[in-house]
Length: 130
Image (cartoon, rainbow, N blue to C red; front, side, top):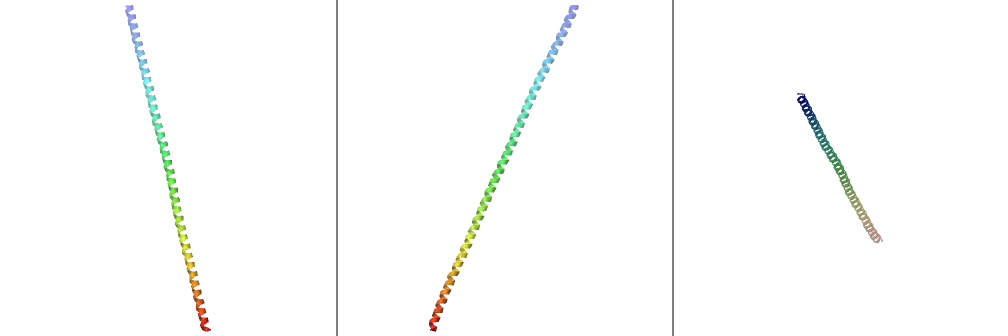
């Protein structure tokens, strides 16, 4: 009877030990599983953040590039506009000067003709008088 009792007690302890062992293993397994999941989650989070950062950086660079391009084009347009206006102004100035020169030349010739005509008339008059 005593032997039987000891065997039962021993069996009970063995079962208890096995149960505890299984529980410990299960806990360890769950803990490892949680660690793996946490690691995975953190890696994914890190990846997403890195991607987001790169996208933002890329957007900023694109924006900056476009602004610079726009600025250069605007500058170029303004330079061309200025050149055209300067050319136009110079052409008009040249035209006015040419016109003025021609008018002056024409005036001088007219004066000269009139002077010669007057001289001839005076000469003729003087000849007729004498």
